[in-house]
Length: 401
Image (cartoon, rainbow, N blue to C red; front, side, top):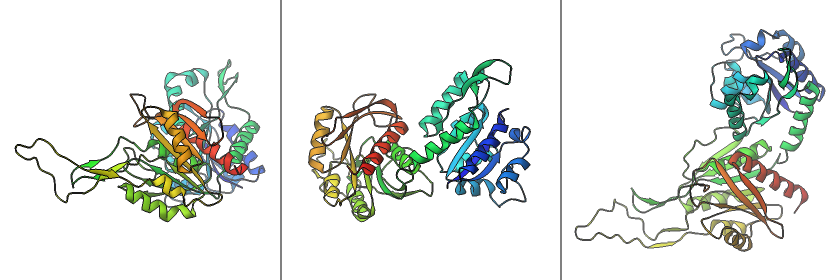
């Protein structure tokens, strides 16, 4: 049984959302409902209340509800389904707009999301709507597309809501596949490490942390408990109960944190960009320029090889994924890393040029495994790549490889 929040919005197909609620209940799921103001003009809130025997979220300021109703529902749900999803709610979700009970709850929830659009075909095909759909997909939202058929306007076109039974099957299939890591503990590292030269300067890299954060989100959607160990990142870190965030600065900090946590983990994904060198000595004051001497010499030494040393601790049943960020000889260097680090999988990605992985919302990777044909993933959003990596790791764990 899954706790599912179903959100009805202002589409003429709102009545079909009630059938979805009933179908999910028949499957054994616990369902609660939220409705936009427009949806209440099409379906009375008394109907879902009668079905679910639970308060229907319609207003942020309902004096008879819990003190913070949208947060309560956001935290309660294990899956959020928006059906039917109007062009308006899709736009709000894509831009983070939260101006009513439903949009605020959807922004607050950490649960996986399924969106089932229904609207006029012209609205569905509008460039703005398609941009918003693309953004939602990049954010990891699952889209069940509308079908072609007779629309409320009296003509045929694409934008019709799929039949409730088909929607329920889609949801059930999603739940079956998306919980592949339920009960597993996944550690993901993200961002770059910094090695201090003095209190002002440091040696670092251009890692944004986006790939690691996408992997953490994908692991949560697969049902895992996640620890995200983050160095320096350029984007906000997840703030959801399912992800424990641990901050580190140096390579040594990261190693200590992993040494403490890895024995209790099932999967380690090393997506962080770790410094290969550090200054032999960190100066305690800001280094000043010297008159007559334009040069500054800093002696560097290798940092600890985290992946290699943590992999030595690996026990039966644990799975390790490493990353190879290269500017040249990508596959050659990645294969060497796979052979020498005792990792189960290496994700090879180029960081060269304007299309490199650092800082971008997209990536193009090759997945290497021992005695397996390399898997090439075309350039796409990091969220999509993260989902594919998590699916592959889940399959490997299930098969025992």
